[in-house]
Length: 286
Ligand code: AMP
Ligand code: FE
Ligand code: FE
Ligand code: ZN
Image (cartoon, rainbow, N blue to C red; front, side):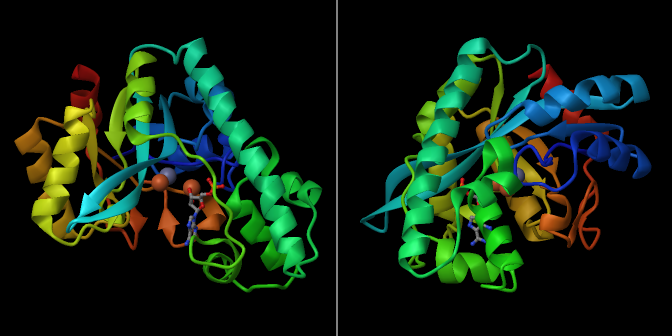
């Protein structure tokens, strides 16, 4: 069994890179990809430890992107998560610099988010959120602070009442265009893969195929067929789409540690996941 989608506490997970490596070994994984949001800091720390302990560690990243596209004749903005796998070469310096710009845009958004929350009467300072999230402070860390201070009792409630797109505290962040994300990953020597396609929320299978084929035409090379959110019917549908469009197959739990306690490394939600080693062998051939 392998797991090609996981997060450390360098992004919004709760396990340190070393703890994540230990958890992978404890659960008997043959390979693990660290795919933190917008940073390689977790991978950089884990790679030496994994090497010493004999775990096959894959360098990865997850980038939140946006794309405007019409659905049933109406223009809609899609939030599209891309995974990048650096299977043969380390990510280029140019790519790391691009990530730095993404960090900057989130930091700037965070300052506006704090002001907005304060204007709603919430007692919160940027410094206390950054103490939790450090380099990659984002909305999940705001959610944790709101919970710790008793404003909400769950992450879900924090997003519903304060942080989510339809919540009163929401402030916009400029995320990169999906095509730009695909191109940046490719140019840096990575394999661009569509993360958890089920979360796109396209109900009509025809439209879902159209969207994925459009991404393929823009340079997408793979699709996450196996994921904790995917039901057996989803896995079957995405495997067929991968075959039809010549996309590589990927899969992982999207483990976030205690931030998403129902998801376990390797086996996903209630044991619904078991990604075979062959998936990584085929990815490496791409
Ligand atoms: P940010 O990039 O700082 O805007 O935060 C985005 C992250 O927040 C995503 O990667 C998700 O992990 C998390 N997130 C977004 N919406 C929700 C939600 N409704 N409930 C829980 N987590 C969410
Ligand atoms: Fe996350
Ligand atoms: Fe994601
Ligand atoms: Zn993820």
